[in-house]
Image (cartoon, rainbow, N blue to C red; front, side):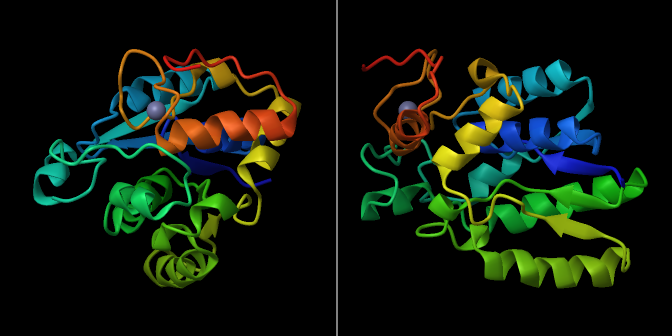
Length: 220
Ligand SMILES: [Zn+2]
């Protein structure tokens, strides 16, 4: 089966995807980016997951990008990270305009340069409400562009695109994903805050999946 790369943020979803692909013997490389995200501790998590799986890990430096992207709580320190449920309107503050287009373009080029046949990304159904660049229409449009740019054989794979986060946790449990190595919290403190949108979603997903959550949260 053809080998591919994974776009690995160090979060729960992409880490499970990396483990799922590794279990199939398809994962050759993991690619992360420092785009100036405030929770850049996720990059250490990505490195730990890649090391756990024994695959090469690229960290692309795009850290200056955040300086040019005002208004997102993920890249602009003057915007508070919202608490609450992930699908709440307040979570729109965590959108980074066109981020996935940038990251996928960079990572697909790296994958192709290393002779790989595709790139996997871990967008899922829970992302669709607020993140336009996580929706199936975006993935299929970009697949068309990448085939034009990199050749007919290049595939942009998004196997979790219709899954809930709880189902991703179930999948991770089956493939023995190292959940404790992953990082979700957008606040980027020493531990997961337990209150921001992505912490809330992470906790709910473990509870719904009936899988033990090894995460240490500041607010229980
Ligand atoms: Zn948090």
